[in-house]
Length: 117
Image 1 (tube, rainbow, N blue to C red):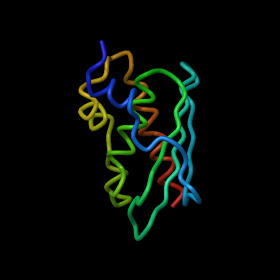
Image 2: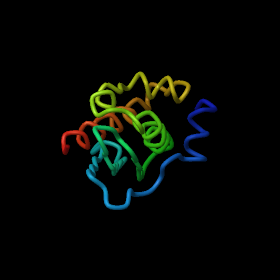
Image 3: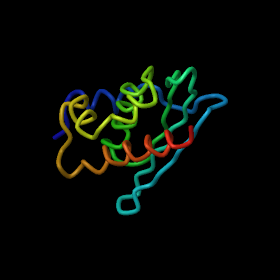
């Protein structure tokens, strides 16, 4: 049901936790399923120097939080804003159709984070 890449991000999450003294924080909840994703980031010289996540919910929601931080870290703010659901889907080896909401939650939370700059 889940790809090896998705399970790897779930079982071995990258960048879990909270950034110390973050420049920006954002948290969203999917009201339908109850998944919650929080992002915190330190931004330096127009780039995401550090980004971390905390997630509560389904396996894909946690994996998307992990994958999103990998995709966004080191990017300029405009490049990070260009990350799409398809990028997460590709990085995670494909999301089941019923789990596409997890990728949307990650993208929406990143957009909220970037609006705080």
